[in-house]
Amino acid sequence: MELDDMKTAWRELDRRIDAGAEVDRRIWKELKLEQTRSTLSWLAGWPLLELVIDILAVLLVGAFLAGHIHAARYAVPAIMLQVAAILKLSATIRQLAMIARIDYAAPVVAIQRQLAALRALRGRTTMWIFLLALLLWTPLAIVGAKALLGLDLYRAFGPLWIALNVALGVAVIPLAIWIARRHAGWFRNSRVMQQLADDIAGRSLTRATGHLDEITRFEDER
Amino acid sequence: MPEATTTMATDSLRDRFEALFERHRKIIFKVANTYCRHDEDRRDLAQEISVQLWRAFPGYDAQRSFSTWMYRVALNVAISFARRASQRDRHMVTLDDSTAEPIDDRAATHEADERVHALQRIIDGLGDLDRALMLLYLDDHSYREIAEVLGISETNVATKINRLKQRIRKDVRSNPSE
Image (cartoon, rainbow over all chains, first blue to last red; front, side, top):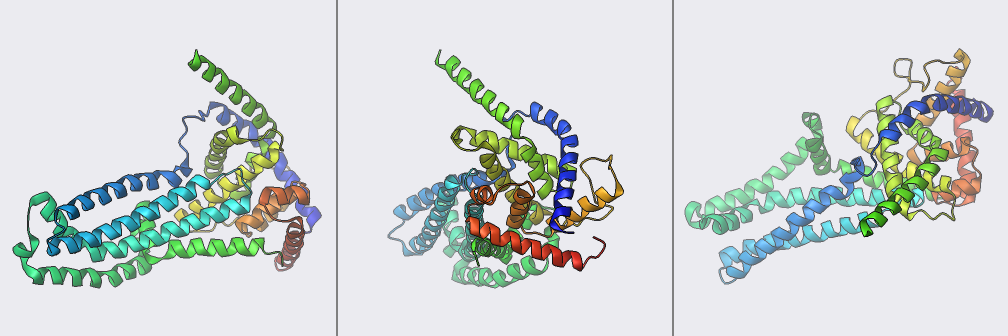
């Protein structure tokens, strides 16, 4: 097929589009644009929710830390949680700043680069949250039990329990990554779980960075 | 009265948008057809593009070409949509007799069908950005216009189109049915 053939085929396709466009025109007329929820609202929806949660986390852990700053057994896990919460909050703010700059009316290559960079950031952030969660769930249990129930987990379960849980968290990391990489099919019925598996396995990040490479090659004039 | 003024302003904006949209709406269907193979996906994408066009319209500079503006929005939305769809579906849509869905079921000739299918197969094999370039080129846009929509130089457009032509010739040679 030479270029002339392609243009002929394109004109034929154009004619068929014209024939079908009348149906689509009716759909457009009925569309209530102001009220229609965009599927692209994923862009800002989740990060806004995360922003609220992140701010709450920083405030709550900060309040706990302020009240237990002189008790190392509580201050140390609280500091670990607070550092993680602040890092997470800064990543969320960075995402929202990137989203605010996206203008679909801007040149295609520039916007696709921004979107790919955003996906890479989200992929990286989710992967790190998962890893940190497995390591920090014991400090979270210590701080949460004291804050919500007044319970001292050191006394209730002993230092051995705490050490075992930390070790378990570390041990589960490679297992979870292995499952996410080798058995992603287990999650096919749930889009959320599939996305999480992709993030944990690093597939989301690989796809996003692959897309960034593709854009760079496209921009390259050689 | 301020509420009435706001309503009037919105109506006026909507009227202007509708008038421009009506004149150029084929762009949406061309883009949707280029990035989607199934009717349902095409409709979803067309709807998504329409919504984003309306949302972006207050920022449209009337001194500039509406079709360029519309192509940019439509292509940006389409590429995002296609990426999300491919991640969800985890399969490539390949065109064969069982999945082919010509826009108009009343196909004119068998030969026309074959050319359209061949064209769609070639487009399907292109990356998202090459697909956008091909769409604009086949739609008889100048290199300058293509460069403006995509945000690359005219030289780059020319280089890429030449490469695409070579690739298509090579592709056709290895599929002699075309």
